[in-house]
Image 1: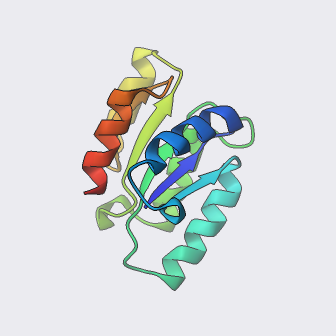
Image 2 (image 1 turned 180 degrees about the horizontal axis):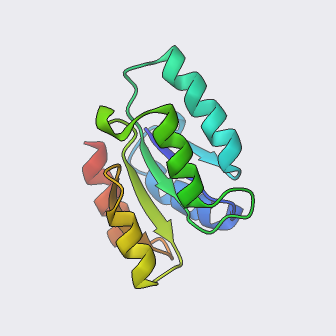
Amino acid sequence: MIIIIDDDPISSKIAALSIKKGIPEEQCIIFNNPEVALKDIEELKIAQPLLNPLLLIDINMPEMTGWEFIEALNILIPESENRYLGMILSSSVDPADIDKAKSYQRIIQFLTKPFTLETTQLLREFLV
């Protein structure tokens, strides 16, 4: 399962369409609001405690940044549980953002927008 958290509906739709070519449609969920995503992840944690989706997280969102989302997720599900692994999918190419992503155990990759065929192939490898 992949969960996309991005306030830009066009970016998230492009990502979802690219990903859905390789997985069932119900295995790709889009959230345009990170606070709603956290609430639903909390419900999933209770309903399906062994679920381990891959998160694609934008870092520049107005309601809650991707960094704030990751911090809140770390409280909800500690990084030490090795669940809910994430990838940053951002338009940022700032080395500080890339370094910051490396400081989180949960973040396994920093990908830059736009979504490409190479990105799609990389994600499919994680879904196998």
